[in-house]
Image 1 (tube, rainbow, N blue to C red):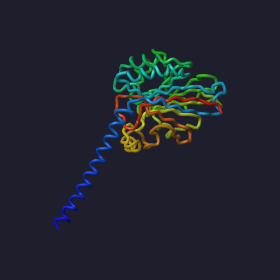
Image 2: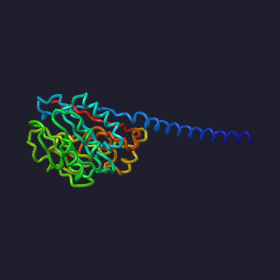
Image 3: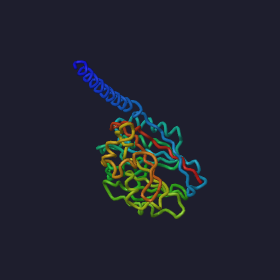
Image 4: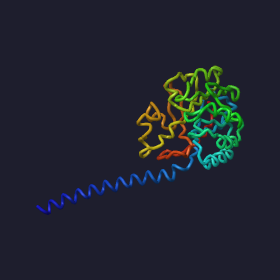
Length: 277
């Protein structure tokens, strides 16, 4: 009888030890990922083809930088240097330039050093105060888009909307100036906009906001997204390619900011090559 009892307790001890060891390993995996890969910016290269893209723009390179949330500026300084080496044609900024700070000078000074062929344009994010942001952008040669748009080149129309949480984004107003056969690219900080408004007049939407889920369990379950805190559509807009309610392609960048902890959500700068066809 004593032998059976000891065997029973030994089995329980083995199970408990195994579970504890597994938990420690899981925590270590996530901690190591957060302290290594999740601190290294990935330059995600994607391509987008459309018959509306002018033939002369085949190979046109766009850099999309969003959710900077500048603190130290060390990471953004490296991004500036990298993008200048790549010689991008257009710089697009997806909002959330700082976090709880009205001092935009450091981030704008760095962004203004990125050399492009056709300029730099951006929209506000939920952490931005547009009354402060837009003058700072203009002072550094960056054009703000606020339910408005502009032709970058003939047949290439760029539009941007206000932030969904703070103001009143209006896709129809933003793209009102675009011609019927133009290639229309829309900037919307929060990708949820694409589920609440008509996007049939848009060819491509670029968004940020979700930080790649920010805190992910093995890169799959996100605390913020699965709980509905960050987006009303769960993990639909975690990162990468998705679709709007109308089937318009949406690309969601994970953002480059370093103020918040990242777990299985690497900081990202997106490089989009446009292709005619």
